[in-house]
Image (cartoon, rainbow, N blue to C red; front, side, top):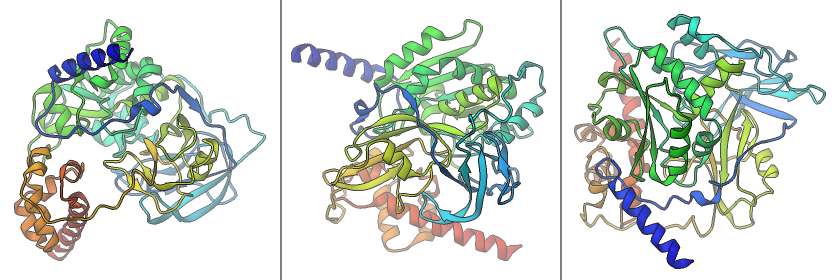
Length: 461
């Protein structure tokens, strides 16, 4: 048996090495075996939900309900406050308990709407209905997606309607669905591909009609070939969509990498995918769009991978937005005694949590529980000029030089070395043999630079 497994592993490695990919990057162990065979399970409703008004990029949502109001599952409770903003809906039928400050996954305290579930409600949708989207105008489709509260469900949480609103003078010939899921441990997108293929293709049709795209692609890594085969098998004959199997490598799921691999098009520095006539959306987002037009459900729940050696019962759960992490932990059997760190997201780009009462948000693709064997403090040593960080950086920066400038607080000089092009993917930190916390220094540097540029802009006005 071991001989056959080794032979199969060698064949998979040969196939993986022949698949298309980008230059540089790293190859961390994917650790997906913990949850990849676990089907999506709906988490039971709990008593209380915390819905932050800021769980997307841009302006926070503006409440349209008051304390004491009765709300229904899927009802609008906060409207977008500006173009780059997103709507927010009730995850459950219940009563508005409070509107005020609450802990956030970022570590900040933000305004949130707290709902208390009605224990006697069947939790049916506020308005469950199918939309004949083929008869709607482009602006109407975009408006429904805007008011549906759609954001990038892969983690970035950028409002989807903004991406689909092509600026005057530009066009989108191609619609690219990001199903790479290159972050270790996470399998939520993988399970969506296996269990929700019809929703993905329906969502793809809708997005293509909005964009006027002539072709769509789904980019998926070779460690998920059964998902590739499943999508290929169920692909509608009348839909011009191609499923591309890409080499398993991190960070293959970044937009810059994805467009390079699938379309052989490079996004210039400071530009967006639409500047090369492409729009990219996460596969979970596309499936959710398909569901909304099929039966009227806005973004009130999402698939989350619960994984890591620190949790007793790993799972892929369909969880209502606003569910507190403590409730998820209880449902999954609790944490092991040697738990050391909890992350929203994966080990490469995830956010370490300070509070276990932080709620599940739209951008929460996974929750990773690490124990004392995974979380080890490593002593930092001086840079040995080995160039491993340079060879790992997918956007061809010099992390070694940038790290030295960040340590010396020469932030203005970092601009000349294109620090703002850094995706904060942590490939450089992963590759560094001296354990230099490069990506952490870059995040601080970029935040300080943004504040400085904002102040300078305000003074100039």
